[in-house]
Image (cartoon, rainbow, N blue to C red; front, top):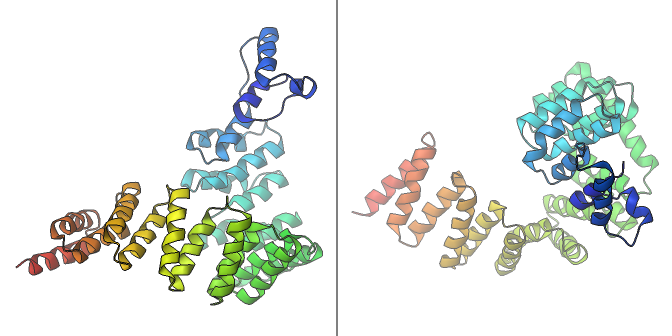
Length: 363
C-alpha cells in the first residue's frame, strides 16, 4: 500500500504522487485514508529518519530493527549502521551483537559502526573478523584495527591483520581514480601515523574532485600536524568558501589562527563557529580563553559562562571561570566556582588550592 503519510512525515516519495504529480502528498493521504482507513503499520523509515539526526527517542526502535530477523538484511544493516550515531553503551552493545550476524551485509555494517576508543575492546571484537570469509568485512576490520600501535597486536594476529591491510590497500589502489578511494587511503595512512603519505592522498582526492570536502577537512588537520600551517589555512579558507555549510571548518580555522598568533582573526572565526554551532560548549570555552588573552574581559566572561551553562559540571569550564575572576579581581565570583570545583572534583585538589589562594590573598 502506498504511504503518502510517510512523505508528509519524513519526505520519502510515494507511489500515488509519482502519477498524480500535480497533487500534494496530503491529497494522496486523504484518499488512502478514505479507501483503507486511518490505521497504518509502523514503518522503519520513521525510525531511520530520527536516527539520522541521532534522536534518542528512536534508539530502542533502531536496536529492535537491527535484531529482528523478519526484516530484510538491507534494513537490519542500515539500522546497525545508524547505531554509530549514538555514542552510548546500549548502541555499542547492539553493534557488537551484530558483528556475529549470519548476514554478511549486517556484519559489514557492524564493523563500520563499531567505534570505540578502548583499544582492547577494538581488538577483542574486531580481530575475529580478520578471518571472515567475506573480503570486504576482512578489509574493513583491518582498516578499523589500523589505529592500534603495532605493539598492541598479538603475535597470533599480526599475519592475518597484515593480509587484511594489504587487501584494503590493493582495493583502494584499484579504484584510485575515485576521490573516495584516495581519501580512504589518506585516513589509512593517518591511522598508521604516516602523515606525509596521508597528505599526499588527501591532495590527490582533491585533485580528482575539488569539491570533495571530507578530504579538505582531513588534509587541514594533517597539515597542521606536519607544521605546515600556511597550507592548512589555505585549505580551510577554501573549504569555508566552497562549503559554508560545513560549520566545523570555522572552528578549525579559528583554532589554527590562534596557533599562528593571529588572535583577532581567531576570535572572528571562533565567534562565527559559536553562532553556527551554539550547542558546542568547547567552542565557547576556547573563544572565552582567546578573549581573555586579548583583555576583552566582559566578552570573555560571557563566553565562559555560556560554555558552563551547556555543561554545568565541566572541570575545565569551572576552572577557567575561577581563574578568569581571579585575574579581574573578583574574588567572590572566583570563590563560587572554586567551591564547585571542590565539591564536584574533590580528588583533584584544584578547588581547594584556589580557595586557599583566595584566602591568603584576601588578608
